[in-house]
Image (cartoon, rainbow, N blue to C red; front, side, top):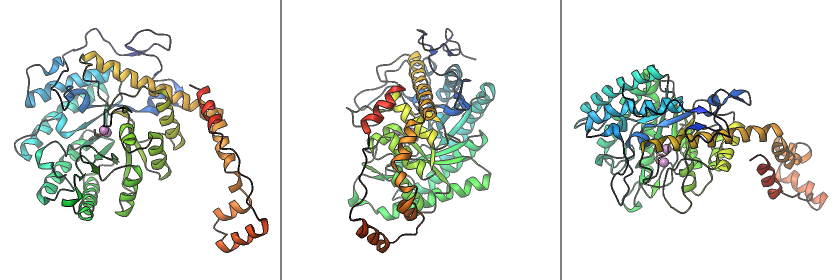
Length: 437
Ligand code: XLS
Ligand code: NI
Ligand code: NI
């Protein structure tokens, strides 16, 4: 059993006064907050792709990261060497869950058959590590965007055999996810979108995407996979328009194609901001449709226009996330999944620890603050009283479906003017939230 971090034992909770960078200041796994342990609320998850495959390369330069477990290896040997390193990191961080893409745990083979065999080889290693550590699989996913065959998309490709290949790939990944006890399966669009409408039959592509998702739902039933399916909105990158552009667009698509009973949303902070929304907005949209599934926890940079996938450290953001999550009953099947990567300049293996510790502590604080705001009750009371006119009189009667344009005209002709509006008190509420930070 290699030990890449011999001087580092399991990261412990030392409380807010600790100066130890390898300790949690706020995430106290077993501490009860609003009736559940922090672990149960947050369901933290570490991703394989950024943690093990992120090398710091960008459009302007190659890899920078120092990763001792990668040394001199390539192909399947490299894939094998990464598994124990990943679980050492996950275990030392006390992560209850992880997530992977098929082609980041195992490489592309020359044929589908070879890729499947390699995935099986690695899945056996993942399984052994899951059993050794007790770390569980939050969700699996297929990587349907890196290979050249997916240049026009996968399920939305103009090439029917690419659709078929993608179907075969997802079939296999579903089997592996199921065998590893995965609690979910995520579809992120990858290249399901377009670069130009001049060459695109949008209606046909969307029909195909829906067919693809229905086939996945059917196959999950066939093999007895009961995990939750998620679709992950993102507006752009790599294509200029991704079909799963934001929560509202995803919900509309799922409804139109009768998929809403089968999929929930996996919302990612940086995707929300790329779509011109806040994460809180996206969570509200999903939550109010009963489709709040999971979170890809990261953050963007307001000064950069792409998916920078930074670790979340902003307490205001994590408070908003946890407040909205708690409002809709918390994360049940999903989790706080760190779809985040260290910066290109953060080259040391230990930076992976600083990054995750910071993200976990930021979410733990967000959770405690959100729980305190809820226990205090003033925010919820304010919102409730703001709508008091709907609790009785004409408001209650409209909500009960008892009024018409005619009856409302009669009422307003009698009254002559509507009741006076009250202040929205935005600044008062912003100050109230700050009391808890
Ligand atoms: C990319 C997505 C991706 C999904 C999984 O922007 O966030 O990482 O979460 O395919
Ligand atoms: Ni993501
Ligand atoms: Ni992303």
